[in-house]
Length: 210
Image (cartoon, rainbow, N blue to C red; front, side, top):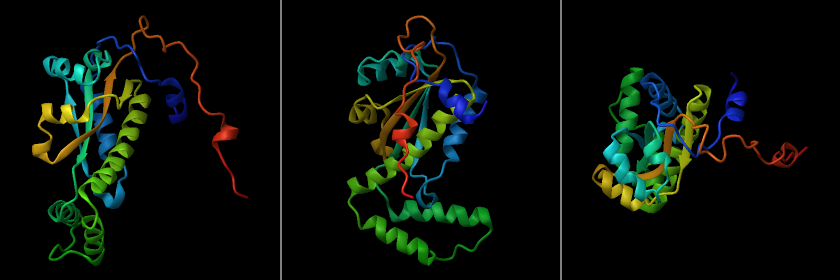
């Protein structure tokens, strides 16, 4: 189906059946996130995949008891860099140069300018920027899941600091941003499953300057 059809099909599933999503579909969803555009191609985030039932049980209270945490087949946790560093930025550009067969003897003028601009900001400003990049990939993953007819529930309702501590993200220089629960809708027990999709009318959503 087209992306528009897929987006009309999808909804934020409230009750999942517990059925497993085939690994090849999960891999496609993660690959879509990996291929998503980011500012200067920095990809300042990672996707953490959780399938362990015991770990999901530990995450559930951190996510205020939401049933999708344990009913989902997979949890994709999008975690972004806590800050930019010269080493992280250099690593990204060095990798790109190697992949493209370009010389990597010294940073380009663009890299120097970009690094200076990012490092002039506070760590919290940096994290806001890295989190925005994670959201681009998060949305791309949601769209890919819909195309594959995999239900996906976007979740921001959780205690980020507690999840970071549980997963040891601070030691990795990461901070959790969002969770995407993947699974299949339960026809019974989901109050939203048969309700009409409602969005802002197109005439109000689009603002033209002619």
